[in-house]
Image (cartoon, rainbow, N blue to C red):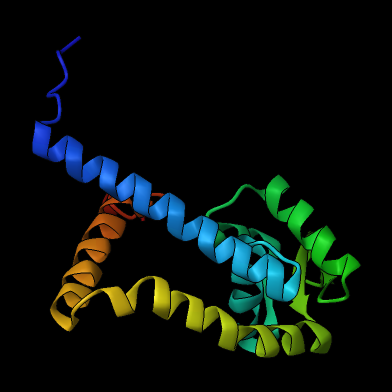
Length: 162
């Protein structure tokens, strides 16, 4: 086994600053959403994805992939959102095993009421602390990181499988 290339002192500083900032930001947004809507940040993200989907519905597997959470964690989250009346499940007519998560009118209204406070929290915690140039750089950096980590479709990098 090859010896790892250890982080330099500067890389270690940047890595730890990133971890610290993202942990604090996620906690800040979770607390704001719990206070204003009684939901964690991940649930808010699910409602946003459904609101932006055609017909305010997505297959459960697609929603789990977009949210980057396991199907079991998604199932638990959707059960809680169903209990609140914000989401309902519908069977997929084309696939007996498949289900859709559908944003209800009540869920859409909760999202509409919660969004202004959430965007204010995001703006105050992140964007107001950065110059426009820093915002642009952060966006470019995060796009590069996300692109490098984004899973490819099965066989997408193997043209002979198509």
